[in-house]
Length: 388
Image (cartoon, rainbow, N blue to C red; front, side):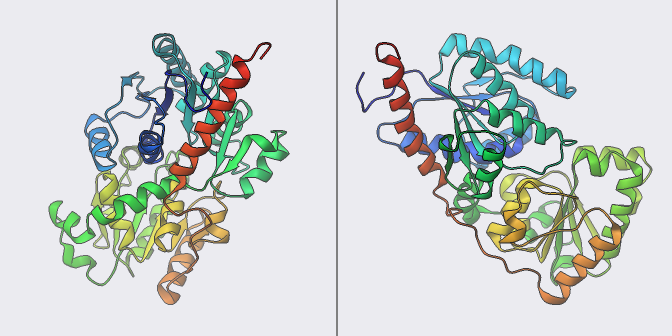
């Protein structure tokens, strides 16, 4: 085998849920641009599947249509993970795989990594080593287990390496490359949809945000599935909205629970502008022009740090501590008084200025492509050798 060429078998890249798209899109482009190109097969598991939203996101990110769609759909964590595994294995049988590349921490990430590992196919995990240290979060279990069975672990921040070493993972498997989500953000920002244009298109009065606005996203089950938790959070947002109009991109899970708990009318006040879930370019436009973002999303913590926009994270912990230590993020928990106090502090002072962390420079995917090409060539050479 040539020391300069990969096998013709593809690197299978997995997307399963919305955050995965932003991470895989620049990787697919970097693999195609690498010399020599790295063959890929894009598999969409259909874990979160809204056809209209999927099509919009793929177009916004310049991501090619998936080569394979497993169409798994929703279900319990066990059902979804098992179904992805059952449907993914035949893809490997049909197409072969030089490696399986997974991103993030959704059920599809763990499921496809398990299938590949048991088939002795290298597993490449992008965004390794992030830990919330809260095993009640399904994503934390997915992160820990995926890292344990991965052969190459690409990290977004140096503290992730300490987490991996503590868990017994050999240090040489981990490679610090930076944050691939920021590649997508930097590439897409010139095409972001301004907030006033977005609101006007939605039939809302854009003049209401002329003096500034905040953005709200809430979707985590721990925040929205219990009336005792969700109610006080909404009340805190109502208080904030009296000082700053809040644009709420309302997640279907959150809307359904607000209706179920009889709380939807609490968002009917003049301080709220309610939108359905938004595309990537729309959310970028909303966030980049906001005075603050209030969220429980992991990805948005990173995006606001990259944009220099103050972020109030409505969670008790975060797997992205660098956004707090170096960025614009403030972790406040779920107590209403803490949420309100953090928002008032931002309104009074402008919030944390922060700085963009190391290697969040828009070139992460290039570093992944360069390293992975060389790693795969070396891996193939070793295993092709007699006794390898």
